[in-house]
Length: 350
Ligand code: ADP
Ligand code: MG
Image (tube, rainbow, N blue to C red; front, side, top):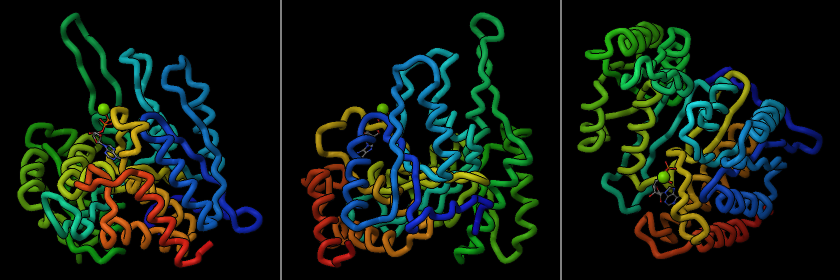
């Protein structure tokens, strides 16, 4: 086990309760597809669906969602819109990660063969500090016309994420960890992040460890992403690099992301988009959310269900080339889902 994350024990009948937060935009329709697939193949999951209305004042929905995740230990999540610019309203997405101390985010960017993309054969694991750094949300206007924003790096969190990165590399037979930073400018904060990574590396002498400055990282990722293996990043650099690399291999609709703390795990699409502009049009790519649901099944130990759904997704977009417009295809979201169901039916897993 990579993190200390508790794996909830199954209830009577081998079933697990999982919190489902559809969020806004395309979230609800994507969750509908996941539920259809799970029902079809008899995945032993009981979803507790909690809608969070982004336009409400106060945090009742949010508190209820967090309580539910604490009880179930696991959630599947869409992106919750942050409508207000008001300082008193923090992003509910960030609030959930902070409240549950989901300190690490993992996005495995692996190309699907034959999908039109800038690069083929990419296989990079992006590991991101998920709770502090530039997302500390400590901003203020110290005097009129001067705004200050604090970036917080702690030894504890830098160490937890670095250790996760090296441990992941060791357990998954990876060779190299690259720590991403801007320590030439942010000497104390990023300097600490890098120093901690260098120290943690001493416990993993069989692995190579190098470091790269964030701006050069973006250029290197675009021109030659194959040089990367596992990446260890602060919060903001992590989201930027995840978006760059997901974009290189097929966009926002493909890759899933996992968030772990010591007690809870939250699964979601890797680039965390709301997709407001494409909602309700039957064109959103359902794959990233389905992949998140597969990660969730694997986490809970339902490997067989995870594997059959994973094979059906792969066959649909790679072999059968049933693809939504974001992947250069002409198919609808429901065409993709129907094809997945057809494959599951042929395998008679239900
Ligand atoms: P954000 O929520 O960060 O504002 P957007 O919703 O604007 O992000 O998404 C960024 C881009 O990715 C948009 O062009 C959106 O249409 C696209 N996108 C996001 N998710 C999907 C998806 N599942 N399928 C297809 N395109 C997607
Ligand atoms: Mg947007």
